Length: 348
Image 1: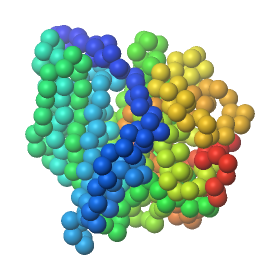
Image 2: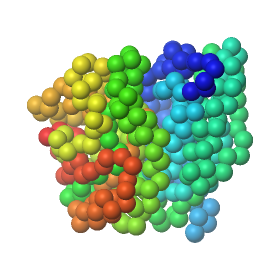
Image 3: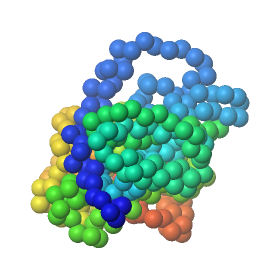
């Protein structure tokens, strides 16, 4: 935080914590009503609600295009810039690519000291530099609520694209970051989070998915996405539905931020988790899972990890390499893929 002045960025936002106002089903309906574009070089469009668009440039190069921006999830401007940038860059990694060019997206209130915006932009720039990409400008508007993010362009070989559909029965599911971001941030806003919990959630949100992607791309995987505002619930359903399979998720194996269970048991649940549940629960067999674990399953994530499906022998190699690679956050195998059952996701 800038020493001579304080700002509560999260209190400026009327929509802070509303990471999933529009659910996956609602969004799909809106997209379905749009004109259909046909181009043989468009490898990935809106059909499967994937993480970005992919356009084939040549037999060796495909372009990935994505953008993401949101209202502050933390008060420290520099940290918010890092989180928002890591979140936007994640879509490129989730599709198997390397980010190359980024543009800032800024909405800023005239009544707030612009030096705080400078700190946000510095945080974003540092994260873009860490990713090995270049920041090449952007666009800003005046708004009553601060918002920040990036439009990112990346590249990938057309034959090495990660898609969020293609999971196969017999696959194993891997999650590369711990859950609980929304719940811990809710505790932070309520001034009930411990310093250790605050440090962990910031570490999770500011960690790039770069290292995880660089490990995963060495192996043949069947599908991949990043877990963000729709939570593990929404993104699991997207992958399972797009693949025509069912995901069996073992709740006891989920990597979870240490304090998130305690805060969930205290009822510190963001509104986005309830919206995620309303949008997705009819497609989930929840069994006898404890309520606080369900809250974590539906919890909206900011800059979450990659969700990957791969054959068991491949998943074992990926996990082993991750264990040897000094990953910054917790990760693990969280379930398996079966033939399509009555529900797209079953919790165990």
